[in-house]
Amino acid sequence: MGNTKQYIFLRSDLKSYSVGALVAQGSHASIAAIERYHDHPQTMSYVKDLGNMTTVVYQITENDVETIKSNLDMLEIGYFEWVEDADIVTCICTRPIDLSNNKGFIEMKKTLKLFR
Image (tube, helix red, strand yellow):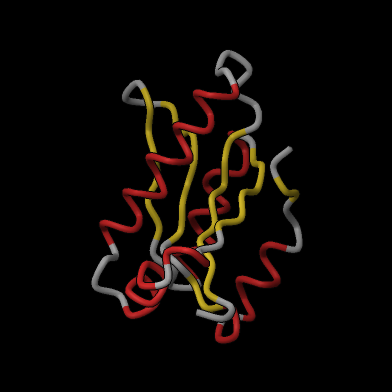
């Protein structure tokens, strides 16, 4: 699996959500992205080695959502946008990505903070 990781961009500005609710949002988005891209070679490799799956969670705000989606679209990286209550984007989750072939994504993630 090597450099293959899944990335979750989770909203940190949703103050009315408990920590548990935020974890659930990321979990839903992760499963949805895996299902949507289950035939992609990097996804198949990622789930084949369940004990070594790596997921990285970055914090974003509502203002970052469109930029993240635009960057992922430009880099041709598949993702799933999790929407709660019909209009609140709570997180964006990528399909598993092999970073050894994706310098653009490496540059993008340098501008983000890990979720705390």
